[in-house]
Image 1: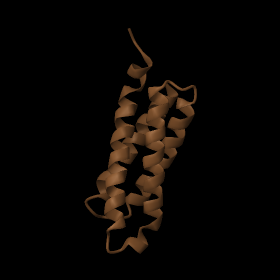
Image 2 (image 1 turned 45 degrees about the horizontal axis):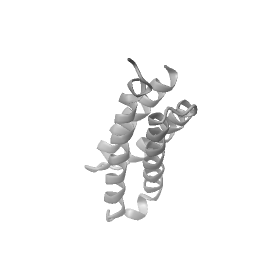
Image 3 (image 1 turned 120 degrees about the vertical axis):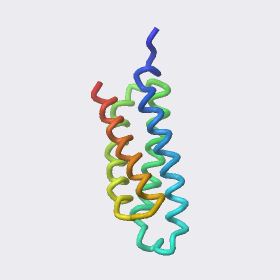
Image 4 (image 1 turned 90 degrees about the horizontal axis):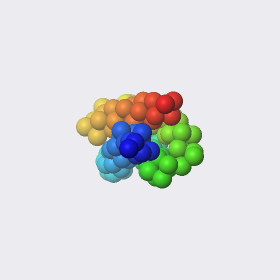
Length: 112
């Protein structure tokens, strides 16, 4: 028997992974010597982590708004990735990568 969890499983895994990566990157950015140069990045990391958590919840409970939230999540993940890519360090680069993967999967899920 196929359930909504089957439909959302890959997206849930990636939003959860992205949430965790953004929280890790956020902590590292807050402790960076150039923290004043990372204000936009920090703000986007917070937004991205929060929208990933919300998207996961909406998919898990099979909300009628899961598609809309997933599209918004993709937009925010892409914005976060773009900002993280500006910093060449061992926490922002992997975060940017998972944000891009999450954005792609959210868009794919929303279109299916």
